Image (cartoon, rainbow, N blue to C red; front, side, top):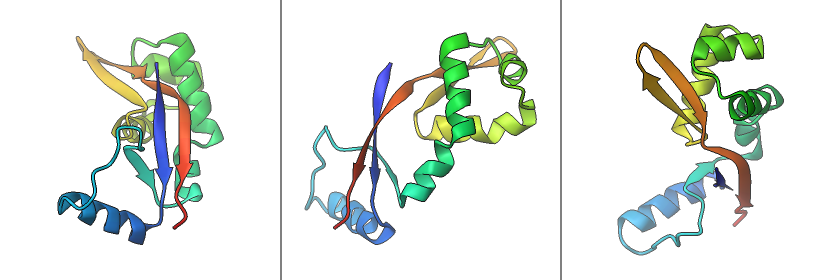
Length: 118
């Protein structure tokens, strides 16, 4: 299980950073976050209490399908879809297709948050 490095940086600074990387003026170090949020609020929307509870269920119970996760969490499968896709986009989980089912696998349950305020 890996610790996911997450950064918080304003959109303007993030845009400048991306342009500097693209132009070769800046090379990120391997220790820098790969995932950036615009604010603490946007990070909190992804890692809110319900979603972290869901992530804990995935890690501890290792459900074989989204249907099983829905039963374990008390949430509807349709309700889980957006959260799971968001988690997958950020590298928090992997959605692995096995036979006819999609199995959620936790990839990160620890988060190292770097706040960039310049």
